[in-house]
Length: 219
Image 1 (cartoon, rainbow, N blue to C red):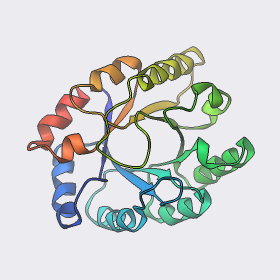
Image 2: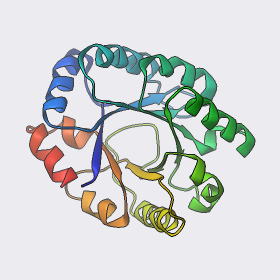
Image 3: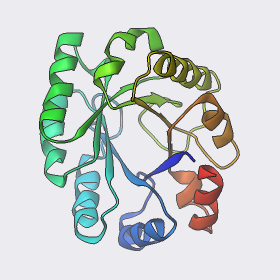
């Protein structure tokens, strides 16, 4: 069964604690923390996500899946490491070259955290094939990063399939995560393509029954 990482991006502040409890009861596997800086992407969610991490660290043991959509990557790694995330994922497009990328991934791992790399919809899988073996997770953006509630871009499913094939052929332990526009109706496409973790936000948060939607996405 695929794992589910629930994005808190669309959760209203006044509902956050209740929502966290309800998502825990609904059996989400991770809380997905969408960190945006207003530079790499248009929106800025930094303060909100730090506030949500404060709440999470006090009321749940469900692991944090931190996705950094930022330009000053090292600064933001240091901002979120104190919350002991299970995963920190950084964007391939946010660094100047692969040497910097590898250094940042090594830095994350040296702090007892899993390291992931994310690619935008229009970034080719071939750009990262030579470093997949050193990351725990590859996150395929199935929408343009920067805001929730978008429609899944069809061709990104093929990227998940391409990555899954590469991981299997090379007998790697790297997991494949897909993020953006994922709901109970299209999740099967990504599971069949080989995704190990699905990120979903508005499809769950805006529903009347968290448990039912989580179950449909995962099963």
